[in-house]
Length: 218
Ligand code: AMP
Image (tube, rainbow, N blue to C red; front, side, top):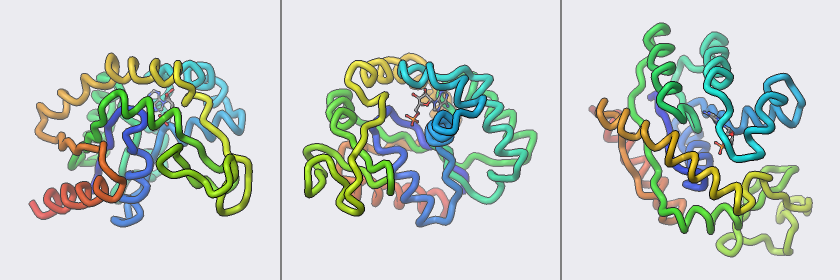
């Protein structure tokens, strides 16, 4: 099963993609995670991407397309995967079609996690994580036991720099302008399945399991 996860920032894409890939034994490729790691390590990719990410803008298509090309060339996307955060523009979606055609890969389904704007801003401005173990927290829905500290290892919690409210609003604007058009792109190919994600994580996950099971049974 080869899937693309689409959805605005804060829709729970990353969390749900991680959970579904673990459950179904799929490779989970998050372009945001790959880029954040590259920035942290100061690689050439990270240096090129950092400024765009800080401003909440998309990195140039050519950069991200060649990243995916290198993952396909390395054989990382052969046996079932979830692409999380890619594609994000029409040129990226077209480039992906070309790469898939060239490598005999079939895209089975595109999952769109939809959440109203107000809920997104609320979720992202309350989002914190532990830099040591990666555990996520959300104020006020899922707070740590001791304010500002990780329940598991006591590390001081951090926020993603691009979760600051003005950057969140910019990322939302970018999503609407540059990414939303690919919802129609995939709808026209009868690949899009929309799942309402302003529900509890367990409810969203149950809907995802149902959607992918129905697709796999066809
Ligand atoms: P995410 O973790 O998916 O929200 O991505 C964080 C940031 O990484 C985005 O705001 C962009 O700056 C960059 N990014 C991730 N994926 C892409 C992509 N497919 N195209 C362009 N920029 C991306």
